[in-house]
Image 1: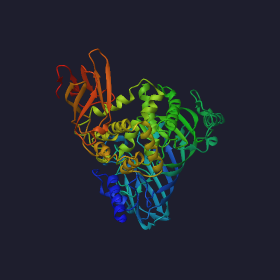
Image 2: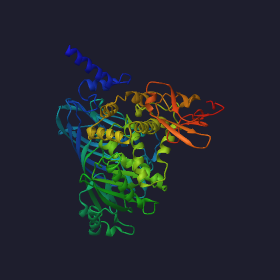
Image 3: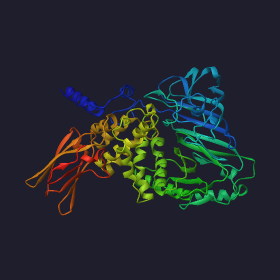
Image 4: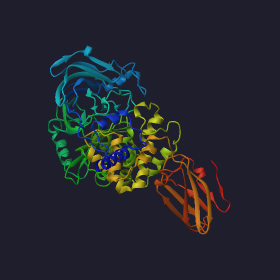
Length: 625
């Protein structure tokens, strides 16, 4: 009898965690069944994560964008699989003639693709005949597979022409100013869900990479300076004694130090050489980028975290650009807020540099940021891009397929940090309006639709940014700030340096909160639903107000009922979103005086069709849809 009781309890637990109504794709079911992941939201006993160590030397010429490099890679196959091939990302093949692209490219930037000059694995040389190239991927078939739990040594030499007219996430911003990303042959992720990641880069969707180590040497002509992922290792070799002193001062200063100031010339910035090689070291990061300019100023300070670690926080910018001189200080405030308040996770890397390039794009320990003249806009965009340090970088989410796991979260919680930097801005109202204005339209799809198939920009942004941030806001209203962010910290701590997927997120929150939230995950992440409540009728008798509401949109939302009385006074009642957990119609009863008017919702609880959210007494009139 005890056996059957235990079996029944285990079966019930498995069903409730898996989610009676949650759609569970086969790839995920197989992974969980094989013990790679568990239904309590943690890695399983068979979980693995691969990585690589890159040693790269690169020559870059800002005058014409020509880049040539060589790299030595140690690849660690921690899986139980023999790998008969290696998959490389060649994302600059986005500019290869004839390739599919979600965004346009200037014809002058198109080329014949990244030129692989040589490639060898464990001493065995391979030719172009051994490499299958398709879009931005290169698949190398190996003569000898990489054995389970072993390493492989890979050598690659390559050349490419970096775009000078097209500025998609990076590029050239003036005569000698570049932000350089996605520039080296990078080994793709091999994971327990999809095996090799073979999704090409077409411009719209973003990235998925392993946490790896980098030693990178970047050679540029004088008077260009280089900023990059990680910490510079040879400042004394490339900079003048005066700049070295300021740099070392910044390494210990809580105040912003002008390392390269306006008016400094090449002679008092750099050592007297025609070319300089800048060397950087970065560990446990999913990518490496660098930027260069011959006329940018450089500000920095160091923030000491409560865990004792220090973060060098810098800005490199054109002194003529509005508000850029505030960026180093504001970036410091954002990182301090993230580390100490929301989400209260210590910043995971030793540096952050915000480079004044173009657009707004995150990279490990780097941000490429255009000039933002509006203080509200700058505070949010800055916090948003720095916030990506947590998701997807440290936590390792797959933003190519499930972009809501990074963009949705980072469209949400950095608004707390932005509010601490610059008060008086409508950070949360703008976020909520950004979703409800387009909610319920044909491109408002559930977030579990893979982002890489959403080639319509409206659909991509809705499922990546707007809808998930609305969902996280609603979940926070239900759980409360302290519980939501404690659950987020728990998820982060468990999956930092690994590769979590949506069900790991769902199950982690379920387990941490002690609640089966699958009804919420289903409604927001898997169903076609939107916020639309309707006042069906209202009545007042015997000192009680009866309001019948219908959830026409199907999305469970926090419900705020505002009553206005004849004397002008007001009263508000708040109902949790759980009232819609398994109902489409509810009756609310309040002991109160008879109101003159009932209004459902407000600016922080928006409704797709607000016209049917009001009811007037004594006429009993409501505005029909």
